[in-house]
Length: 363
Ligand SMILES: [Zn+2]
Ligand SMILES: [Zn+2]
Image 1 (tube, rainbow, N blue to C red):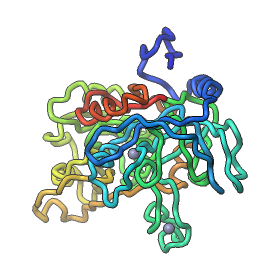
Image 2: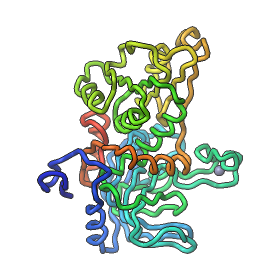
Image 3: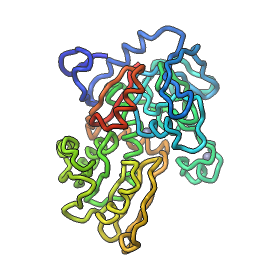
Image 4: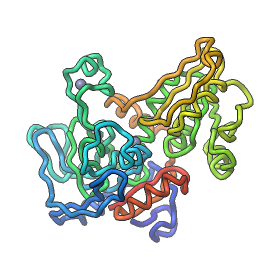
């Protein structure tokens, strides 16, 4: 994969705009003609992913096969590998921020076509009939499938997806730049909506999701307050470069009370300081799928109608809303690309916080 923005040598530029053209995926799509599929597979919890060959899989009714061009690495993937989510499916191919092109279409799929570029998110299937699906809260479906957790995902050269849960992406933007939008952007967007429309918003943990959401919030003319690991001045500088009006450690209080705070870091001990940071009637949203235990805290910091709530998964409408808005905002994603075979390194670097923005695997 080569950088288009500057010198066209590999890995020379790690910042990409979704306004770039999609020359990358077109070349990948044309080049990838062999009939085998390779993937990084989690065969046992808490062990490294293993490079594995498969015969190419065929899409069933209502499904598509997608040649993967890029797949974002999400903190949820770490929770999958670490066995921190309930009822794991093993073996599994992780990865739920997939950008690729359709190269096979199953029976009954009407709205998508061969060669079309699509994005495949975390929510991979819902039942359509449970009380949550019926009340338009399919993110809470009783019988869901999640990409890269309970159905195979995108740490692979190809994947099979439910066509109804695939988003056409159009041709604007590079594959790598778009990948982080599929979860960091999308579930971040849901979190921001649920946080309400207050002007002053705090982000606890400034990684893949927050670096996208900071741009959204700025576009909405809100003030972003970024909280990083104490002493992580590089990330604080990164946050300010994306428009944060204040950046400091999670051990600091913001200079003024916040209307809302979103906790992206999977760290339960951040809940009490976030509650202290929001004003009366303020809202604290826990955006992660997994969080360490929340320590005991005095009722006084919840009192005065402060709210504490969580965000689970996404709905297809979230995806439609966010992906329609993203090009208007001109979101720039900061990405660090890794060859697919280096997925274990990407996960280790994410765990250690060794890069800014988002990691993306490229087959
Ligand atoms: Zn994710
Ligand atoms: Zn359902």
